[in-house]
Image (tube, rainbow, N blue to C red; front, side, top):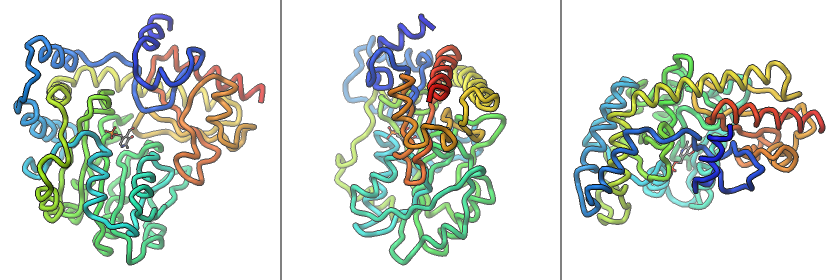
Length: 380
Ligand SMILES: Cc1ncc(COP(=O)(O)O)c(C=O)c1O
């Protein structure tokens, strides 16, 4: 652990910087693995060439690289002319939110949910239409969705695969969502930036590839940010299905939205063109780590904690209801175990007894994190 820890403690990333040196971080969604060599090489080559002026090459290569990647891994080819670049997944999501809705409009999310989905709605004066998902299966319930909608509901913020639950929604669930979206004339923003990180042969389904009714009412967001842990580079792409939305984007002043830097585009293209080997290795580690967490929870080594098996992501959604830490376990564990998980209550009103564990680290660090949580639970 010492070698890895020395490197990780030496980087500026917020994951390792936010808390003191006695805390092991398992919160924000960055991975602890060294960057993929093709990404490092792409960035170094630009710097070495002194090639940091205006440069259209990386930006022009971005969408074709994404289209090829999607087709190869997810059997869906975005229409390149309908895609555009953004500086992050939330940048794309909030831009669409602002263009398609007005203050007071209803926007659906499926909670527990990655907190910025909720704050995007609240901070822009839109209304959160919170459709709660329930364990142990965390499946979409069409009746519950339908019951939550009213005449002011305009948009659905979807997360496929879902953060923090790690669900890959299946054909039946997506078809039900498509039927509802059509019936109520809803736009769907499908944030699919976790799509590459599936386990056990679970297949990520881009929602537009499942149901034709979604084609012209969906914006699909993709990125290399989670897959390759390069969120700091600030680059994402979106496939904008609805023609009216493409027109609205095109009508904005040309610099209003901004674009990824040439370095971030070049690094992202390198990831999508040459990152296959690195990704295969990392996915094997992530699945082994997921199984390690499941196994240790099943053995009772985190007394009272329950969890379901994530089908994707490197996030474990831990249920502390049956423990002494049932009220905001993340806060208690930071104080008592010196591990930093993401706090459940940030993900939704029903998540008070939960915490999100990021297991994208070395097996040794992961074991130490689980040991510390187990010890704190035993002491109470
Ligand atoms: C589902 C989801 N969307 C968006 C983001 C943030 O992406 P970005 O930093 O590109 O805005 C994250 C980060 O963890 C995420 O999990």
